[in-house]
Each structure stands twice: as structure tokens, then as C-alpha cells.
Length: 389
Ligand code: PMP
Image 1 (cartoon, rainbow, N blue to C red):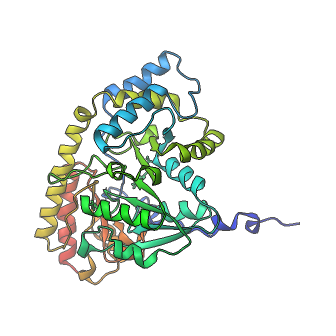
Image 2 (cartoon, rainbow, N blue to C red):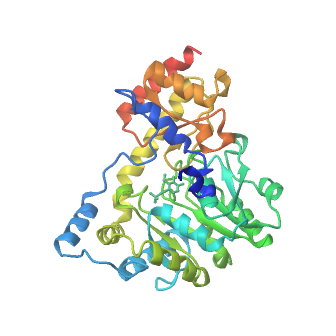
Image 3 (cartoon, rainbow, N blue to C red):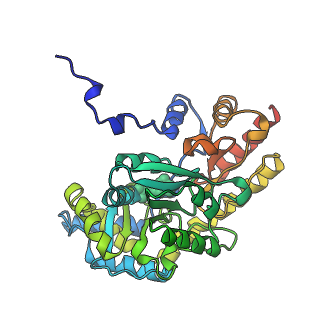
């Protein structure tokens, strides 16, 4: 009797491979590449935060915590979310510490979706959204955003895709990969749309602190009356440069949290204890920890904007996160061809926009979570490359 792939779960086998992975496989075959392809901070986690993890281990804090996470940490999170996001969450019943926003998204979707439920999300977007929705037995329904609108999500575009089967809307601002942010009126209009269509909103605000040009992030948690329909995802990976700690949190109303927590409890038990102690330390002086990183990102962003402009590469204003999303369509190559040929000719890696959805065609993502010297060299090589096209 033979056994093979027909035995695997069809809804997983059918998922496409990540477009980023495919491209990294090509990059990994080469030496000396300057990579603008990576989606994580180039900074190390501030030392006092790492030290808190070490101290916790020295003190023998190597046991499980409560399922929802350390109470001290949940209290600190509730305070931060109130002060920074304008949201009011009870740390005992409405805050859950997770293994990255990745886990938060997964368990939220699994708690909310029944098979066949439709989920709206906007593209270009983080590579995980479509697959995560499908893995939770939902039906992913992408909604396009456009460079002409600075990649803001419009209610007209949402209206065109919503059906009686739509249950959830997933949004991410500041956005990976476009760097787009929302204005307060956008946030209110999307919140009104969610209420009008009786949806639940899952807002991935993992880049909340990373906004530029004097803009300040507007959180969906600050919209009066939305809380009962909102799941807020936020974490430590980006603004604190703590990707490897795998720490994030979910804020949701108690009626939902009960069920989200059930999945976390059976699947994860609790987030890693030493990472939780590190995160508690990260809550002590967030502004001081972030300031030097934020200064560097903004300076690099300004540099990239100026150098793309000088090279004749059009780009909208990326007002948040640490990604630039220049438009390369005018050079007559597809996004993938552009990325492959740039790598070939100049040893610079950028990610084709199509890795983030079909409407990313004509764009490439350049991460500026890369040191300024490398960024300068990469920009010079890109400028030289486009002259040959
Ligand atoms: N959401 C977005 C929009 C992201 O860009 C990322 C990381 N690239 C994540 C979630 C995952 O973050 P975490 O490390 O907290 O799992």
C-alpha cells in the first residue's frame, strides 16, 4: 500500500509558497549581497531588556506562567495601550500575551471563523494574511489599495467586496510593505463600515510607533464604541527590535477573549517565560529605548526618498513602518524580473511587490532596517542599474 501527499490536509497543501521565501532562496545562492529584503530591525534589542531575560533565568524563572501571561506584564500592556493607543482594556480578562503577533493573528482568526466565512483584507499586505485566513478555514477576499491613494484603504473598495458572508476585516497600518498610514478620517470611515456590516475588525498595529514626518499613528482602539468589535494586535518585534523573543499581545473584549484564550491554552500553554520578563522590562522606558532607532529609521527613509527621486524612480510617501515601496513599472520589467536582474547585475536584494499580492505588480519593497552605509551603497547601485534599463 502506498502513502503520499493525498493524505495531507487539502486546505494546507493547496496554499502557495511564500513569494518572499522563493526570492530568499535565490538570494541565498549568492555571496556579498546587500539585502534590503529583510523585514526585521537591524538593531539589537536594548541591553537592559536582554539582561532582564538573563536575570530571569539566573533566578530560576524557568517555569510556566499563567496561560494569559504574567499579570504584571498584562497590567503594563493595558497601561501602554491606554496611554499610547487610547484603548481601555482590563488586564485580567482582555489582554493575552502571545508568541508574536503571528500567533495572535492565528488564534484570533480561528476563534472567529466558521468554515466558509469570508475575510476582507487589503493588498499589498504582509505575506501571512491570506494563508492564515485559509488555514483557519476562512475564505480570503483581498481588497486592492493603490499608489494614487498613498495605499490608504478606502471604504469604496471595501464596499465593492463585502457580501452577506463577510465576517471579519483584517487591516494593517502602518503597512508592511507599502509604508502607508491612515488619517483619522480613514480610521473613522473604516470603523463605520465595520459597524454597518456587522463585522469584527482585526487591526494589526505592530508598526504603530514607526511613523515619520511628524505623523502620529491613529489606533482603531481609540475609536469610541468600536471595542466590542475590535481585536488589537501589537507586540515587541518591531519598535523594540525583539523579533527573536517572539513576544506580542492581543487585546480583545472579554466575550471574545474567552475563546481566543482557549486556543492559546491548548496549543501554546503560555508564551516563553524569559521573553515575558524581558517584555516587562521593555515597558519600563519605551520612549528612551525606541528614540535612537526611530531617529535612524527616519533619517534612512529620508535618504531613500531623496535618492530614488534623484534616480528618477517614482515613490509615494512612505509615512510609517520601515519599508519603501518604489514604483518600477516604467522601466518595462515585471517586479520579479526587476528584482532578479537587480540582484544579478548589482548584488542588491529587494522583494518583488507581487510577493505581497497581485496588485503589488510594478513595485518592489526595500526595507530600510539596514545600516546607512549599506543603504547608501545599495541606493547607488540601484541608480546605476535603472540607468541601464
Ligand atoms: N504583522 C506584520 C504586518 C508584520 O510585518 C509582521 C512581521 N514581519 C508580523 C505581523 C509578525 O510579527 P511577530 O514577529 O510579532 O510575529
